[in-house]
Amino acid sequence: MACIISLTKLINIFPIFIFVSCFPPLMLSQSFRSLQLPPKVTGPESIAFEFGTSRFYVGVADGRILQYNGPRVGFRDFGFTGPNRSKRMCDGTTDPNLGPICGRPLGLAFHYSLNKLYICDAYFGLMVLGSSGKQATQVSAAADGEPYRLCDALDVHQPSGNVIFVDSSANYDLRNISKAVNANDSTGRLLMYNPDTDRVTVLMKNLSGPAGVAVSQDGTYVLVSNFINNSTIRYWLRGPGANTYDAINLQERPDNIKRTAFGDFWRAAALVKQPTRSLVPIGQRINGFGRVLRTVNFEAWYGNQLISEVQEFGGELYLGSLSAPFVGVFRF
Image (tube, rainbow, N blue to C red; front, side, top):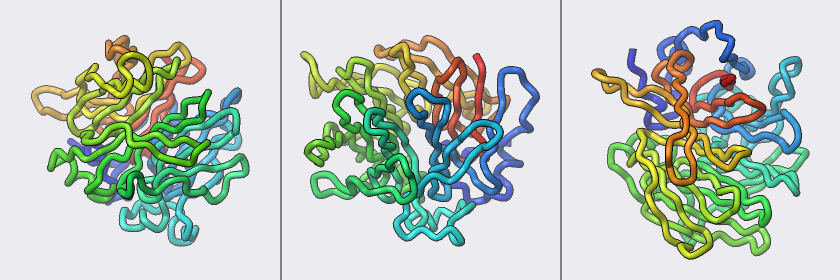
């Protein structure tokens, strides 16, 4: 059965049935395991590891940031983004209309030296959590007088602490993202927040559904995925080509991008299965020139539900999703 909900990054409208219709039974495998979220919780869209530990954090569909403390403890509450969020109303919800109240954390990344967790929330913009968690603080809600409609992904340049992030559309929020895809919306922006000046600079405009961002190891460029027009671009932050960009890769539905310890990148994306034209979730390891170094197919565990993130840690790939009730872990 074809399921295209995550194709357009729709929030799950039918939470009771989605797992039956979209996810195949998790097969016993020596290469794959699932880290189950708490009951009724779904959508670990992005993953952020603490420096020097195996502890990680995920933002989920009901507006919380959860901390994973190993198999014995599992996931526990760490923080939340909605300033007026109610646990009674929000915990476990997948109702898209509650997003502006409960929040919807998407991209996550640490500034390690200050132990700050930056968050792109779909409704509340760029936010940050300290080491004690709880209520996230809003850092920025607009740039150049234009409010963020869909803060989606971010990365932190560790030496400077600058946060590179994307606002996916000026016209559509997360509840209406299918309309953005159908309209071939190209009003997204690439932005940079400087914590020293507390100012946001617009680096690029007219992007087509920017959904992922990753700063290079030397800080000279940033990769940006465009979900709607199926491209990945390289924007130069400094050097001879500063403030210019080039398209480096064309791949269906690219989403989050995460740099590895070796300086290349893992990107969530899709393959088109013929003759049905259905989409298959994949992860691709690419270098800074867009060359594909490796492709891993995750159809066996996700069916035709797209994944949102692939992040390498400890010889394994950690997988994010907008609708799954688990974090996938693939040993390769």
